Length: 357
Image 1 (cartoon, rainbow, N blue to C red):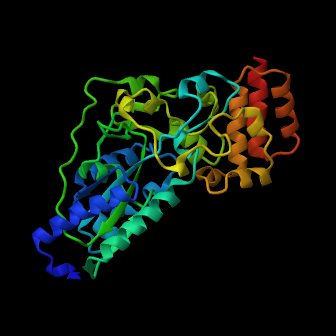
Image 2 (cartoon, rainbow, N blue to C red; image 1 turned 90 degrees about the vertical axis):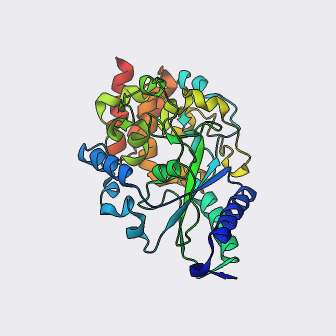
Image 3 (cartoon, rainbow, N blue to C red; image 1 turned 135 degrees about the vertical axis):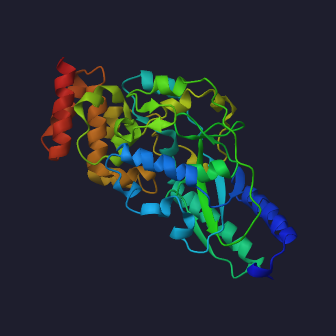
């Protein structure tokens, strides 16, 4: 076994190639390696926070510079191994059909299957174990959207894609329907060439955003983003944005769905990312009828559980208020009104009022 401090450039180069091979065998579609210089990303983050675009996501600022300076977060870090894994599910209905039919509930495609944190973390742990068989005194830390990490900036530097105008990462051969994960390490591995941008003059993602949350190219005001409103926000959804949410009850994919590069996206081979509990085809009324206990059972192992039952009902109430209404919808809203929290009650009353207008 090699000692980390004595590894030659040739050995490190071969190890980097092996890491990419092992990652493919573990189900990752691509792996890249980058250094820890994130000065440009740090400047962008600072301006974004100064503008208040992070809303109530206070965790985006509480770690100071650790998010943009990996060596402060994990001492002795020299490189970041960045990976991506496709998640596009085998869904029965296409996105536009679901958004046009107001009886259906739209759940962001990434959340239809098993919680991606668990899937990627388990695979990355296996990758680390493989590396440990080759190197002594190895230091690593795994992240899957789970710490103060600028994962998209790191992935861009590692050559996995470029950050598009909607602020998601895009790969010219695979679109953007993929998850990212990182391994921070003290290994001085050779780094990959950063990806170049290919958005050109296209602004389809900006124009299609239901709430106009993409306030400028590469500038997202999370406070207007439906993903933020339905997942991150724990309080009342601003009244002026509710009608724009439509039937989106957990996240929003419009900016990705319209992106021309996603014509190259391929379906994920991962069984864990296939839709569970018919969440790709369920009606709003069906999901609104879930009890607290049913919600916990149906969302076991899902990323959806993190928003909690009350926000789940809040989101669906807004979507029902944007529906075509009808006797069954009115009955469901009225029935839940008698047995819900103050937060949910406010959104149900809005829904009933909106259906009357």
